[in-house]
Amino acid sequence: MGKETIAIIGRGIVGLTTGYRLLEKGYNVIFIDDSPYQSAASWNNAGLISPTYSALSPSIGTIKDISKWMFSKNSGIRISTSSFFKNLNWIWSYVRKSSLAMREEIMKLVYDMIKEAVEWYDMLSKKINFDFKKDGLIEVYLAKENFDKRVARLENYPKLGSFEIMDAKSVLELEPNLNKEIVGGIFYPEEASLDPRKLMLKLISYMRDSGVNFFEERALRFKLQGSRVSSLSTNKSEVKADFFVIATGAHKEIYKSLNLRVPVIAGRGYAVITDAKVELEHHISAGDYRISIAQLEEGNLKATGFLEFAGVRDEPRKECFDFLHEKLIQYIPNAKNCKVIETWLGSRPCTPDLMPIIDRIKDNLFINVGHCRVGVCLAPFSSRLLVELLEKGRHDYDLFSMRRFA
Ligand SMILES: Cc1cc2nc3c(=O)[nH]c(=O)nc-3n(C[C@H](O)[C@H](O)[C@H](O)COP(=O)(O)OP(=O)(O)OC[C@H]3O[C@@H](n4cnc5c(N)ncnc54)[C@H](O)[C@@H]3O)c2cc1C
Image 1 (cartoon, rainbow, N blue to C red):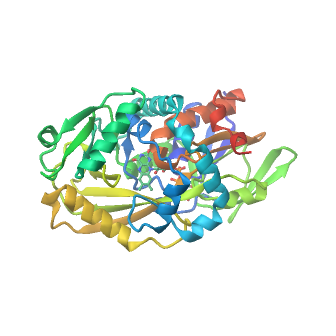
Image 2 (cartoon, rainbow, N blue to C red; image 1 turned 90 degrees about the vertical axis):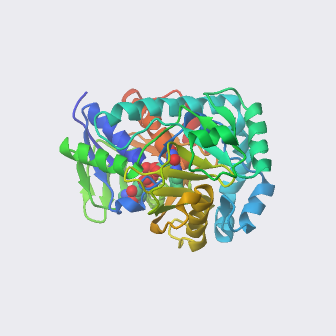
Image 3 (cartoon, protein in one colour; image 1 turned 180 degrees about the horizontal axis):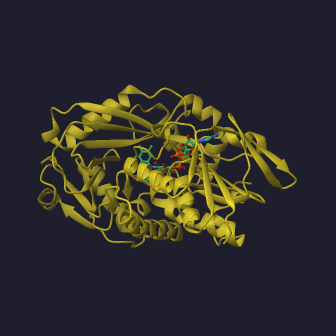
């Protein structure tokens, strides 16, 4: 392979894994991104790499659910009224495609893609340390009604991966610091987790040391010559490259110069990091609210949650941070006096079928966006497919094409 230059727009996890793979193949890689690391969805997400749990927890919704999400304040999923009217096409497409996520072959594909990620991150963590752990996940419930509903669903889903349905006593033996009033839980032994901030920083510094340039510039528009991109104008320069890859997550300004409609909207999520240092052996999912609780390497507990369809630049809602804090204490009572030391909001890039778009849109322009709730999980797979598309001119997954939204 030659030393062609590939410019990647966006250094979130999707851009970074794509860049890493291209670097390994001998390409000359450059990145264009001028935002602080913290503004990427990849910065402070839950860091869960969860083949079984993610495959068996599809985010589906009906019109009835959507109207409920518009008016509820603290439900796990919420749509702001302005976002509802701005994204009517997206919502319509989501409702039409929502049954896709329940299809057995899709669940199996999600499982396989994330299983691949567990192996890939395991391999990568031996080269660069980002607190990768294979300790499993426990999904716990405080309300019996919610637990029974979840167990009934799991029994109807295809048999994928391994999990064990446990009574409260067995869960508490595994995780003694959980609330003693839990009614039961599900243990997923195959699930892994990592610290997403460390993953980003370590990948950037590894690539920088290997000669990759990171330009602090904002990509504004592509210049076209026939069906090829001849250059990219940024706020500071004119970037020339042999190939360009768009990995801009939920941000859409870059599509204007291409006259391209990419159906990605921001599914915002919230995180709080607290000063609680109560010991946890596993990653916890507070199943009643779909909140994730993780222990950072420094010992602090972090809670993440919510899927809120609102503008990327809309103000965060303080009540979401308060809710995460309150629920963390409810599930881990020994953290009762903890204080929030950091808050964070990130925008998941969501397509209507919650699957990424991995495609070629001009002869030398590619796109890898739309990983929604599972971008860290899917990035190793989607970056592999993107490289295949770039080198061989095709990949085998029509499911990830732009055409599916035509
Ligand atoms: C609360 C929360 C919890 C989550 N938990 C998990 C989890 O446990 N597991 C999991 O797999 N996923 C999780 N996710 C989802 C995951 O974080 C995202 O799917 C993933 O980070 C998306 O990565 P990305 O690279 O596509 O986008 P981003 O990380 O947002 O990166 C996009 C980058 O593009 C840059 N950019 C945009 N436009 C331009 C432009 N014009 N010029 C230059 N640069 C530009 C931005 O500055 C940004 O740095 C979670 C998300 C949230 C919010």
